[in-house]
Image (cartoon, rainbow, N blue to C red):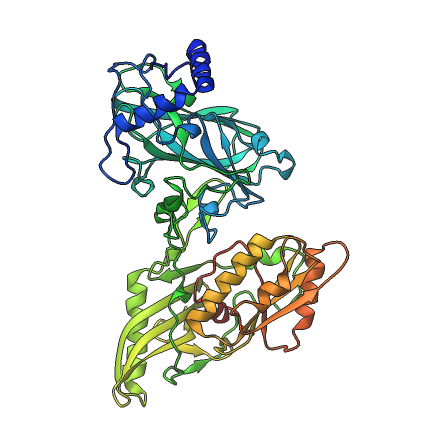
Length: 537
């Protein structure tokens, strides 16, 4: 049968409805499947029932499973932070386990209203996915047309596979709009894409927003045509069938692929954040440098006014580059500035000279990590971490200490005797929550991984729970692999500050470190040790 990919033919729709009533539609559908010889995951043959050169009057080839034709899978994440798609990727189980799954019948989507939670101020994310069926063979261009409310913050990504395989997708379009002053704009895909008439191509469309309401539509055209047009429901279908509970139907051909525990190919796009604490070595204390009295740049004998402390913070530079990323409202930052190599060489030579004069015999092999905080009037403080080989003990050791180089004595390097970090100090991570089960699970799993890698017995998770109803917070902690944890139950109205104070009051050791974190963060394996190195009593 012939059916336009641009507009649905009402007469044909009525005709096929009558066929369905008489039972002939089933016979016709089976006959088409036998001719087309569909076979997912292998060399698939497709029957082109007609050859047309434009997109408007074409023959529609049969779908992989016809009952999902004209719809697409639609996953929704509610109450998610950030405005970038990467903020969805930091979820440990992404892209699995959205808040709910449903389907849609159009690639023009009013994201906030469709999800039905406009009162959540745009804290949501979406994933639309399925198969596209090109109505003609040729190079295709794609655009995303976006309209938004004032000051909306959002990002979109469009991905397309070379065939039906989700693992072969590549990104066609990306936009990151930190703060929209425009009511509408168009995002053009990066390049034309060659598509074969009637063949299924797996695609995914992601949207992440933090504020405002959005409408977005994906359009396409053949490269030689002048106008972009809407993608008709006749040209797409769901990737996997859903049951009445919004779960994948296991018998669907793509269910196993989309439920696979193998990490999503999208995770390759997420930049790996590398901290100095990612690789932790046992620290050996060596008495190599002379001691000197050192006073921190931010230590003041007087009390500062409220919020004035932020103006006394000195930014640090590092070596080697740490590749940490920061997301600002108007740009993407690219990590800390780097210590110039000349400074690294000078510092290393000063330490080598002191090492050769010490009681130790061996070799200073390399700088493992260096962090510099500079005060041009007084000098520079360094967190110096070295890899050394001790000949008499025939082993490699690592040192980590704060050292000082006075501005008026460039040939002096000394140990900052009153500025030392404690390797074994207890670290308490305190959180306050109510009905944030998905993020609490994320945090606990993250800290389980941290403990499994480091076997650090000196950190403890303290959770202050205001009678959460979505999950059993205490049971999650009891069943976890964490060695040290504390559950504190609170009643009454939720108070973040009150909960944090209750957690802090639980800690009785005045020499310990107490910190709070956002639960959605993904902590690096050396996070606790990294914290110790940067908290000085």
